[in-house]
Length: 555
Image (cartoon, rainbow, N blue to C red):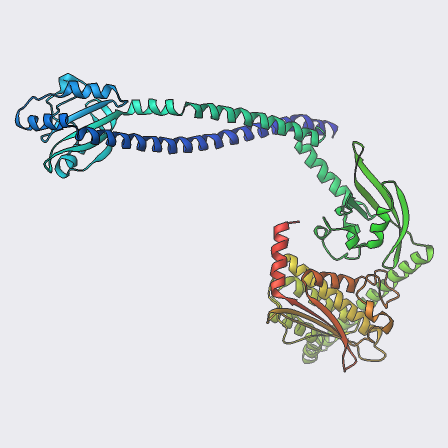
């Protein structure tokens, strides 16, 4: 095992480092190549257009030169008229490759090479100049090779009598371009050197930040630490210097007041939002290890607070909860599970008796009575399932409604789902919170109805709808109602009328906090039928806002 870890630490990280450096360098080179290619293309296009414009301007000026006009007129009458010496003197004063003057028959009157005088001009791009009298600039190949050729007609008395062609050879165009933009190559090399330097600086900073551990090893250790962290049965919370939660293990999410939420809902949130007492104890530690007693729900904890540092720099605190239960509390806990076990045993015995009844009826061939017996036993369950399937399209909410029906059946509480229920599907995050809200309200309702069965038949009614612009959740029970002394503080953490449940005082607090996240309203009232009704109204627009914000933060 040690040999394997050593190979992992020494061989694979080297491969990763080489891969990282190569990938970053290649990415930078690719980006530079694309940027340089695009820049060169743009500059080249601009440069070529500029040369075309300059060529047209020079050709237009020469076409108006009286010497050129006179020579072209004579050439149209008398063959072998030359203007070469005059034109070549002008060309020597410019950066163009050639200037060619032709008569109306496209016969050259001037050319850089004397041997090509009095021969026809090469190229079809001259024809529209002589026939239509227009100015054009083209890329074409002539007797001297590929070039940018700009044409202007020579006009006398309103008639086209010839043309002037000014050209720059392609090889000279490229040379001019490189001379004009030689500094760009220097900039490219400079940027590449800076990119290499930045890669070295980033990798050096990365190594120092990760304590000179390679990325694979860091990820491996983080995964191991996360598994170990969540495997610890004692609740553990880590907070930063500003007392926001930076890490929390699975068991701790069940201890804090909002224990039905996922870990992502805790990360980055102030500790005081979940427990002001715990936040005050942590702040009072003054960056020193300390231990205090704290009551959460119905359980007492000894809270150990340890400051954690890196290189003598304070980074936050680690909070560990140790259950502080006396012997009587342990006996009560054991009695609770014993009673639950007895209840399961009684249910098993009850269903065993029903199976014996069915077996006896089948042996006596009383088939009609068997069908009636099965129909009577399953009627309620099928009615509930049918109602849920027809009206609740949200799988998480449908699951919680069915689960609470089973719980109500075990407690011998009548469970009624409104026939007018309707709920569409929402994002997983919203659906989880709606299911949590309903689950806590129905749990409280079942307990209240069961506790008051001596005064009223135990019954729980649930109504869920989102047909309008609101999501409406209503849970009604036949319990005795809320005691007057806690009526104004029923949604506060730890306030409860229960005495036998260790986590009491959390459910309604959690429901209220979740409703606040949607900017909804939570109300309760005692009805004329002596039932307690809890009603929740949430605007759909607020649900969409919450979904958008949650997706944006992406906890």
